[in-house]
Length: 301
Image (cartoon, rainbow, N blue to C red; front, side):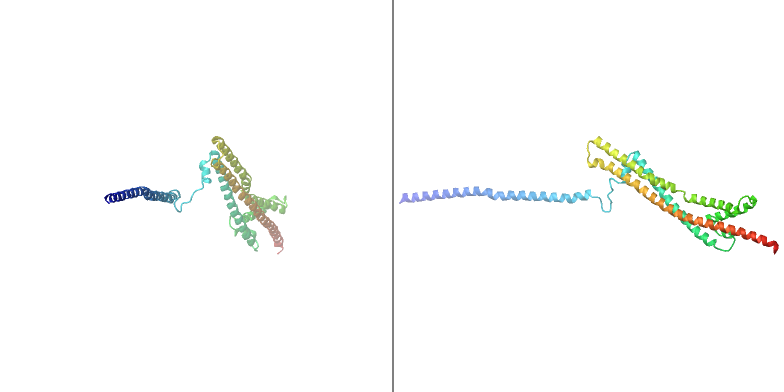
């Protein structure tokens, strides 16, 4: 009986020991599975912080790179860069084109104003010379700078001088010579500056073409020196060449158009001047005939 109890207790002790051993082993095996989620969670939180930092960086970079609001970004290949980066040959070409453009526009405005003034003088002279007064009285009502007044006074002076020729020159021919001279003088004055416009219109494209050739030459030199034909190496010189071509055309086209328009307007005004000269010649002959007729009737009365 005693031995049986002892055996039973020994078996119970073995079972308890084995149970404790199994429990300790189970706890040791379960410990890594409980720490692994912690490590994964820590790594995930670190990745999340790194991703947040990366997403925050682009938000700050554009503020430092992008220019402030309201500030215009300049063209790196515009006229200013052409002037600053160009050599003396390119700068001289730009100055020549600028001078030609300023001169042509000055002549365009000046000639247009002169033609407008001549047209106004022509209307005034036509209205004044339709009166019944003498030619001298009617001419004195015009402005001193009016070319029609100058033409009339010159014809009256020629009429006065004709009496000293003793009839060697016919009166109509003598007056015609003086009036034609006045018309020719006015015609020459009206055509002043048109030859400059024609010269600018004919030569400005070739000046721009010279700048184009020089810009292409600089582009080839840049490629040869750098050994690379990338766009950043040739964009500047090629852009300079294209700008020179555009400037040459921009100077030539207005000059040619203005030359044609002003020339046509000159022809219209000169037609009016010749018409006035013809009427002046007729009135001078009529006035002379009336004076001679009055002189012949005077002794009889």
